[in-house]
Length: 635
Ligand SMILES: Cc1cc2nc3c(=O)[nH]c(=O)nc-3n(C[C@H](O)[C@H](O)[C@H](O)COP(=O)(O)OP(=O)(O)OC[C@H]3O[C@@H](n4cnc5c(N)ncnc54)[C@H](O)[C@@H]3O)c2cc1C
Ligand SMILES: *[C@@H]1O[C@H](CO)[C@@H](O)[C@H](O)[C@H]1NC(C)=O
Image 1 (cartoon, rainbow, N blue to C red):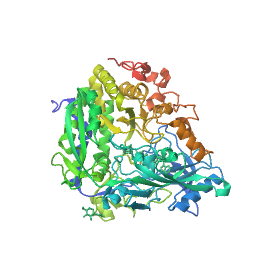
Image 2 (cartoon, protein in one colour):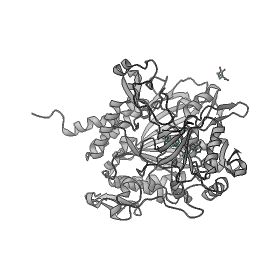
Image 3 (cartoon, rainbow, N blue to C red):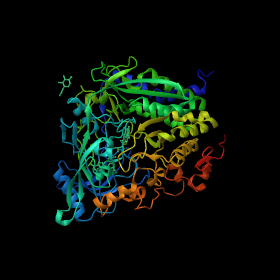
Image 4 (spheres, rainbow, N blue to C red):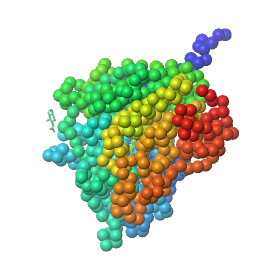
């Protein structure tokens, strides 16, 4: 019997699921309702006390595992709803000298920023701290509790014909959490695309002396030095109670996608950033293509009710999630790089032809340009939305109980609806054993050095072009722009962030095929081009010597010394990445196989995996790089 398809075609079929992810969106709009499986709370506690505080808890990231794969234990978790309760929480921690940290309802950062240090420590959740949103029409500002979710804020200000011009692409973040790691959209004009650079005021709750009642509130306004520390603080200064953002009159965006060859990309980048206010691009080095996202401001009266809905943050059915995961697992193992390149080409065409998540009338894509209100054209989500009540101590995992929710409206919370509808959730929902984990490498390089960075990556690509197609399945190299920041921990120059995602195994220490190529790119951007890792993303190895990578570390540390002299808001991780005074510290964890997990840059073979044939070797193009390469690998 002859096979109907040659084997590699069989291999492509599941890969197609990933490649055509961007078409899912169309699919979704026609499939109607699904039963939403809620995301679990990042805080899990064994007990609660009479005030509803959680006792004997753990705090996890949204993917569940931290980068170091170790648990974070918390003695007490509190859930303030008012500023008075927030102050009380800080006072009770500072009275006993306990370490304290703040986490949002979603805990979307991958390193241990939210893990309080020491023992008998406190965690403040802002999950329920979201009742205030106040607009000041004369100054065009909005003041919100730090736990307010981005989508809620965006929709609220739009009702007043106002707009927050730049926001990160995921609507499930809290405003306090988004600014505290330097989250951004794309665009280098004016204040730039970092949310924290649109902050003009803040109320901060600080630990204080006994005679001050152990906690106090300070009010910071634009122009004050302390605000330039607090606007991007990793939560180490105190608890942000409210944030005030500068708004603009409401406007629309006009978006077109354009596909070009990557020849000349190095010369086009900085011009492109200057030419379009919200520009960004996806570079696919393996197939030598660039997808330029040409995105400009147009007047609010321009016709168009367009929206952007990123397929990856839509509600996905459990079946779709499982298919994607299986495809990614397969892709990890495949040595068929021709197949991967073919997939990359198909993905790019699908993105271009299907609008890449942009929908002209909010429902379908009919052609470029897509015009719509700015707040509907950048930030998206939906998979996180669930009407289920969430208890402070965790979540009811029985999705068919009262906690059942529907998506897109319309279905009642009954068992019949469960049997007639699919179950859906976010692809990372850690309660699924098919959820997907990722490493996220996001490194900001000064725009003035972008040309050299692109040329260097091209040199590596030219050594083994097809290997680069491994990047394509997860979106290629995504490039977004930021302006020089006001924040002491922000970008010192106008910058371009190079970002790529890599599938991460649930099990530790599993090598990735050709991982050396991607380690080399990561180290080039960090070491050769002095790149700044995103504080809320990136693997542990990236956070070396942060003093050299941000605008004014020394000034930041001086402010911390004044606002939190006993470092109640610091922990092992922030001590490692911020250093102590002028001594830069390394965050790297040197141990067997550490380079496989992104915990270190290898220095010796044991940091890779000699038993599996991986040895620590210099980079091919950037010779200073140290990467784990398989002994059979050659160029
Ligand atoms: C699907 C997805 C898409 C994303 N897209 C983007 C993007 O487009 N651009 C981008 O830049 N980033 C993006 N991110 C990263 C994300 O914006 C950051 O990780 C962000 O910090 C998460 O916010 P959070 O509310 O979950 O905060 P958490 O992870 O809970 O906390 C982050 C930090 O803020 C501190 N913090 C939180 N609240 C307070 C407070 N009230 N007072 C003091 N400190 C506080 C915490 O202590 C911690 O240090 C994305 C993440 C995901 C999961
Ligand atoms: C917003 O603008 C629209 C269109 O110009 C107008 O009809 C509406 O009254 C405005 N709303 C507010 C709250 O100003």
